[in-house]
Image 1 (cartoon, rainbow, N blue to C red):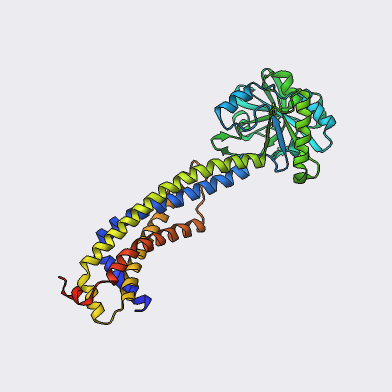
Image 2: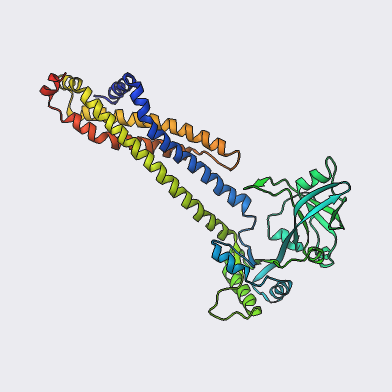
Amino acid sequence: MRLSELLAVSLQALRLNKLRSGLTLLGVIIGVMTVVAVLSVISGLNDYVLNKVVNLNPDVLVFTKYGIIRSRQEFILAQRRKPVTGRDLQVVRAECRSCAAVGAQAQQIATVHAGPRKLADVPITGYTANIATLLNVDLQAGRFFTNLEDEHAAAVAVIGYDVKDQLFPGFDPIGRIVYVRGYPLRVVGLQSKQGNVLGQNRDKAMFVPLSFLQKVMTSDEGIAILVRPVGGMKGLEEAEGEVRTLLRSLRKTPFKSDDPFGVVGAEAIQALWRSISAGAFAVMVLISGISLVVGGIVIANIMFVSVVERTHEIGLRMALGARKRDIQRQFLLESSVLATLGGAGGVVGGAVVALAVSQVFPAEVKLVFVAIGLFTATLTGLVAGLAPAAAAARLPPVEALRHE
């Protein structure tokens, strides 16, 4: 029989048992829906982390008290470390020969005032003037502060979009005055709108010279040193080694002891995220696999029932010249079509779930995910139909014709 004839017969058989076919699809629909939704969310989050969360340039390293914390024990150990200080920054700037640029940052939380308006709990980040070459800082208006302003602890600030909207609604903030802990600061720049990044509002922010922050706000947490190596990415290892040596020497760290500071880079953050997302993906794939296995078992059982119910039909077709492989192909096609229809429903369901999730977390449905979902469903149906199809093909024609 031609494939078109087999397909027509298979679709007719499925139409005659709509309720049974529909119930059979549930396991496949749930499995494929989970696969498509999880792939879409994890893919969207991966892109998001790469483009938004990781604010470092790829050739920049950060040396800080904490580094990347992976466990409670690491956090406890990191708390015991001495903070990275301004003296450390001076030594690294003066002695690191493989560093093309060295900057620093620190952060405090404060309430910002402008006339009768105020905004509480604003992250105030102190930067060295060269930070714009080390981080991805994008300004919509104005400028960043200069080296001279940083050296003299000038009272200038770059503000985020939410600070502008709350303190200067409808007005150009450049040149206006804001107050932090009683100190007046002149706004010299406005950061481009950033939006929320995994629940963190990046528009509620203010940047000031690091020297000014250290003058008006004290902290036991110290600073973070940012380093860009000579030669870009090729010089990362050499620069990291040199700065490690300098900081260990300043702390008189024994040779075999661990670093008393943390080192963070864009690649390290992305690698940490990949390990987290891989674990979540593995769990969801397991859940999807169980759903598909259950769906496959249900399809196999239904197909066995169908073989029994259609024994006379099978015998009649064999008597009219149908070969065993034609019978086998028909039942394989029926199980595959049934599972593919479930896969199509799962793809639609997964896309709807991804769309709903995208209101909170980034999610992106790609054509490759649709193809994976449909292929997985079709393969499940094909495997589930092997045994029933073989059983149908082995039926003796004479006995099949006698079956009522």
